[in-house]
Length: 297
Image (tube, rainbow, N blue to C red):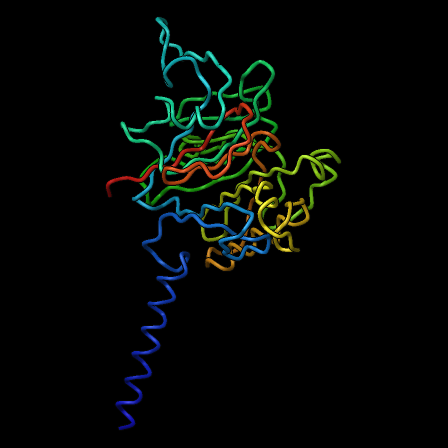
């Protein structure tokens, strides 16, 4: 009888571990991507003000690409064999649906706005689409987010300023600005942003990487405040709250600890798309988008 009880306990423990792996993405080796809404504590909530995508860059079920606003095909060359870069302003809905947004004839599963756009309609930071660069004047000064090339199981998400020393890391990169995590240490960047961007223009779009190699993409939707009763965990996202929401998402989904974090273009630019639906678009022209695709693997 004792032996049977011990066996039952072992089976229950094994079942609990298996169940936990299935319900907590970071503990599931098969996890690829998930979309959900979260409050400002990083807790999943149908009424959450934050639209969140978490993903595993190493998943063979995913692929990636960067798109920028162009009047011609991505990767087009002139008669001398040089890449053409004729930029035009495009809004989020345009840049995620034009012909350049496709990968191998497939439309993206998900997308988030990324780089700032200049008055000359050029992206301002470091943007590289499948190895081809479409960058601006701040490409060496501002931080950028990217996912490397190579076999899926070798892909790495990086966040740093300028080109990476290992060229395989310079495969898909998008520019941003406003670094609030460096090597696992959080910084309230309110003063760096200035009063206007910190406390008045608070539409946020951001990315973070974790110690276990996962990626968190987040767009804060202020419009939700008009239909959702405001509370301490469901309000505009100020810089001192970035730590709460991202650390909460990482902890609640077993993703490890936040290592690097950066803002994408905010104000009138944030946009997030997932599985056929645009969850937020503010209507401003943007410098670039980061696109995610579902593969047949």
